[in-house]
Amino acid sequence: MEIRGERECKECDHRWSYYETGSVSCPQCGSLRSVGVGDRERHTAMQAELDLSAHRTAVGDGSIRDAAPALKSDLRDYVRQTGYIRGGELLPLGDTPLAAHELLHAVDVVARSNRPTDEEQLYVITLLRRADEGERPDHDAVPDSMADARGLAYAEAIDAYCRDLSTWLDDNPNPEVRTTLETLSNHRKRVEALDGAVSLSESEALVEAARELHTALVDDDLDALASARDTLASLF
Image 1 (cartoon, rainbow, N blue to C red):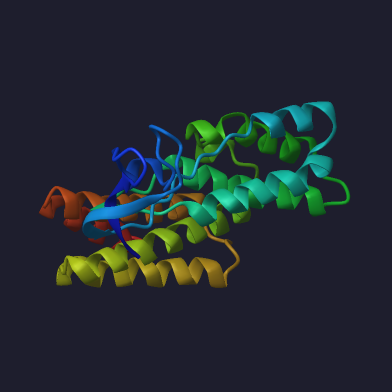
Image 2 (cartoon, rainbow, N blue to C red):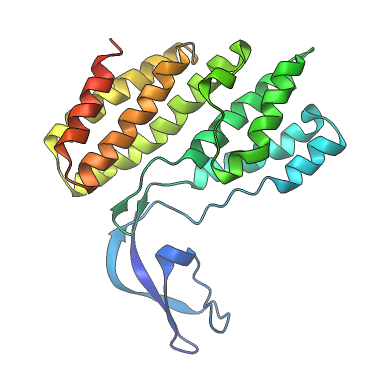
């Protein structure tokens, strides 16, 4: 959607950036009576924040299965609100959304299992400990039984990123990046069709390609575009 970047309070005339606060409430006086001013820009990045502290406590006091419903609900809210265009600026695919998507799938694996292994439960706890700080476990720390969950989670995160990137390209055409984006999307669709059953290195390569496309666009970096193409070509 296209949104005016500034709000002006009708009570005290204070102005603030909607892109930064994501709120129509005046930060000066608290009034909800405000109007949008300034130019409209494409904006999908809501002010999504991920705080897992309460869920860490819940798991510590009980079990992953007991904590799963509330945890999954908050994770779904976070990934739904996460966008990658802020006031017309294209943002990179960060580690926090990737970790949130993976935690959502990993929790589901443990919650649905009749007898989850200690390794699986420890991995969920590892993700839960630092996902809201944008820390992802290295691929060699992923249990074999959790590899598909990571593959599917990353495919879903990349899908969300590709949608916003495609929208950004509608406003800022770049045929070469568009073509490479389509290749990335085709790989992502393949991973989803396989329910995430691809190598961990392939999942990471798709993340890297998405990030290289961002660099290619915001820095006008042809080397980054070539690197994204090489990364994707290596997966065939």
